[in-house]
Image (tube, rainbow, N blue to C red; front, side, top):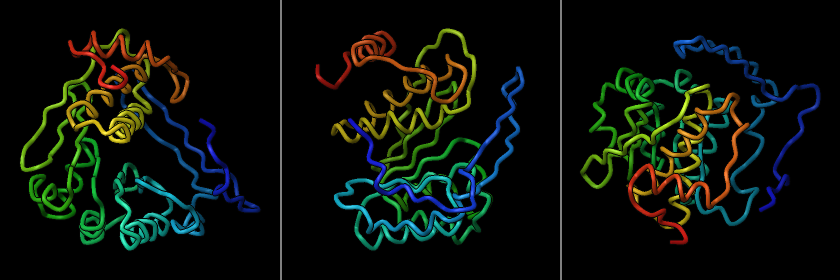
Length: 231
């Protein structure tokens, strides 16, 4: 499907946001980031777009994250709170407000501990504020806190790990795809795991690709069950 560019705003005199990630052989990373035009993202409003079924509040300008969460909430549009590297910008009270507004939240294990430290709440207590809380745990898979239970989602087997940058984004894309197809959390989480596994086998954040048949075949091999879409 073609992606619309209707809501891309050009900010004169500003560069597009740029990130430079340096990774060592132990997968330790240092990021250098210039926000540029991203600092003006709050100029875009949720109400500018029609037919939104599911939103994502991801790392963005501080004002944009706060305002877009409020706009999704006021419009009764379900959304993911995915703070990522933007998490340190917010106080404990602000993070709790995000959780109270959001339908779902997703963080990695490091970010989840930061939320615990900032809010003073346990993981279980935070999970009670959203319909589902997802915590990704790298090679250990992920945990989904939903309906008063904890789902353990396995990681998918990989060949050679080349670059972890972007694995979290790939996981999120898989989960969003699964939910958009009406799948349950188990299946959506496994799709996310496989997306992350495929990504880590490639250098760069968007240099990997696969066909639907290739993905379905690898899913069946990884999890010993048929791919739940189109099967």
